[in-house]
Length: 462
Image 1: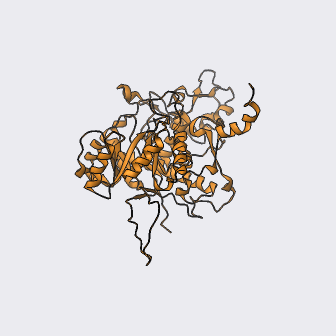
Image 2: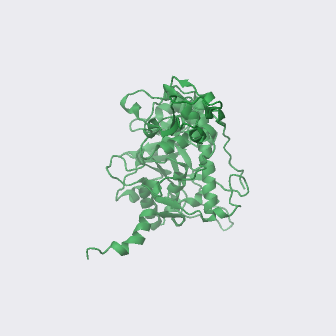
Image 3: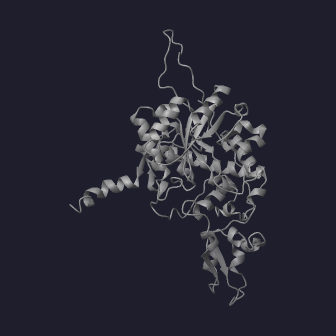
């Protein structure tokens, strides 16, 4: 049995005061001047620790407050109130919600799984990955406990093609030549960022975090050239146009775009180094020829097919397009029909905001996934996207210390890894590779609604 994979996390404080969900409104008028003010009885001592922050031009009490409501209930004149912070409500969007951003900040700071003592109070279902429910029937078995080590659960995945069959000599020796492949201990690769105030420091933090986690980071070719001593953690993306195949051959894997000359570019790369893995980056758009494109690339020798949705997880450049989960299911089902699923590696990225989205994407049919925006959020990004319009970044992302940034990313993925182990244990799955396409372990809202209501309302007009 291989050595158990463990991510070492270390608490890494925020640079800026956290935007809290709720704010304290502390009215001074009408105060009775009690001999023992409820503020001084705060068990978290937030009223003594509060300061004025020049970064947010406001009181830091909202970051410190744990929302126990003791002061609110204890003030005899009801002069202390809690209210939703409008700045918190304005964070992110409908995918990277304020709750998601707050959870990611906490995980990046502590490296721990967030715990809500009050339970989950949100909607039962929603769009995208929120329309999926995983089977947790094994949660009652205490042996399914990967975090605390009572049962070994592997999150290892392989990158690369697999032969359709193995041939052996009569003596039992293997005839089939092995295909080049890479093995990573977690089913997450860092993908290129769709936005952000991206400096050399941000990229260095990203690549260093990938190295610490023993995974890979896909980066632009220009970025890869800046860090020649970090080649083992990078996958350079070779944009359309001239490229240096000799330089590219020093990496374990490179990525090229889905262009008219993609196969010619791949042949040049493979010619410079036969065991070099080549990935093709394809927009995750639902097309009738998607299956044939995957089969053609595989037959030509492409090692990884990487489908990329937009940053929210939908078809890029398409209004009201499909969610990436539906595109994964389409391609996975097509490969099953032609008996080729086991031979092809598929990676999907875009719209993965939380740890459970990793497993949900794999249950739909992905071999592994790419993380992007959550890594930015771990660096305190507020998903305001001011950088796209040339505006100032409110958290000065470009000026981070690379070591601080890599620690934050490692903490986030460390918390995600523990959540993967929790979910896999609850599903009774001990091997991450078994998650791929295991749709019997998941329920889809649209299928349930169709099964439940189609017979009742399907023939209303007949």
